[in-house]
Image 1 (tube, rainbow, N blue to C red):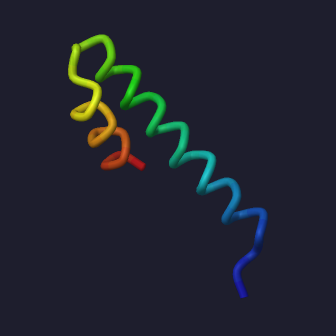
Image 2: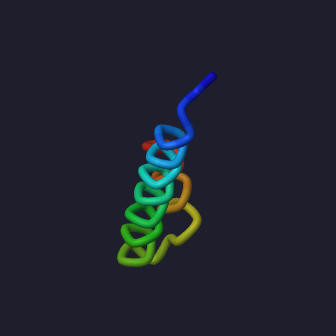
Length: 42
């Protein structure tokens, strides 16, 4: 069975990348593209 702590960390990293992506998208006036980039990295 997987460790719960590891799952949480992976989730946080994913969310972090999502925020970075949306932040980039915000500055580039393209929110959805930024979110997609963030999800791609995550």
